[in-house]
Image 1 (cartoon, protein in one colour):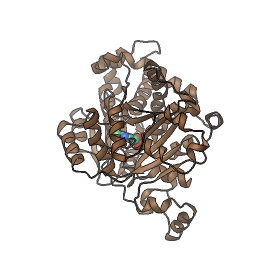
Image 2 (cartoon, helix red, strand yellow):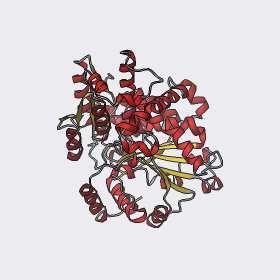
Image 3 (cartoon, helix red, strand yellow):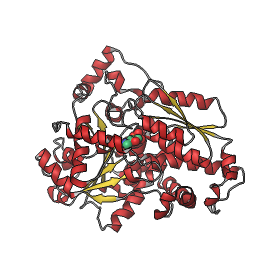
Image 4 (cartoon, helix red, strand yellow):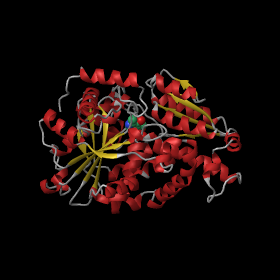
Length: 456
Ligand SMILES: *Cc1c(COP(=O)(O)O)cnc(C)c1O
């Protein structure tokens, strides 16, 4: 574990002097920051401990498990047991945003709908499920019950459920990670406990309990739920703890999205290269999801892809960690920021140090936005495109405006000329919402309807 210093008033004052953006961040104002140390992919990659080979290995593992999903989760049959989401243009939303913000948005606007991912309806169906599969495969191979060239459909059986029942899995979560880990682990037969922070929605806890998952509730935030889960798992040698703050497996599961998106864009005849830049806007909590996806995207598209992370003004942990260089050595609470947001999955006060340190050189930028902007955009997307998402999934939506109106010289530095920007693709990663119950969605839409459009 990393030491987590707290900061004296003097130390905070010093930090503020060194890092002028902290003033608006601490005042909870929406900010944008483009990484002045963005490093070309060819230079950044060799310095990392993870490689394209690791992602390819994860991809092959998911392919092996496709036969299992085909039988254990029939909703995946349409895609031959591969858990992947649709990509679609949203021109009506683009037009609605141009009108609302009074700013041109050049290029095309695309939505990557992880809200529709089978099994758990959020981006966590990538990394979370992958880590459990990796663990299950390792156990079964070691016990001699499985071989790499077997038909993995055999895992969907009482014999295997009994075998996995000797092992436990634990995770700390604000909700969606718990859903993905809980559902897949329970289906395989593991004993699984999900440690939920106070902000986790009741329906997520109910759904998990209905699947036989042990849900442990806390009055405190995400960090505490994770720490408690970690402590419990440490006492049980048969328990695997899914460490959202540090897990390489989660990261690799997310990273497979890069090659998948590349194939999808090619299929839709959407070109990405220096002349046709791709901007991807990723809602960020602890950083594993967006960090892993960004890693996969950089492998797939090199410097032609620009990865920008979006966070709530009340939980800007990754921006804070990367901007100050302190990574998991600082939390938003250290700055007096409360970490309270309606955006499920984004209420994280301290970023993953592993992700920040690994990805910082390759990340393009960060911005924060208010809850009311996410809510307003939730309503606008529902009206313009008929697509319903959870609030956090809208965090990436204003991204194109942040890029197109920045004045820090980012576009100029990277040769993003008006001609290139006219051919750009802006891809908003819609990270969740597929499993939100109808009455909860009605409540979001009602809230959205009464939300005053936020200032840009
Ligand atoms: C978890 C989550 C994120 C962010 O992922 P992190 O790995 O926590 O950064 C974004 N959106 C939704 C809906 C999520 O559930």
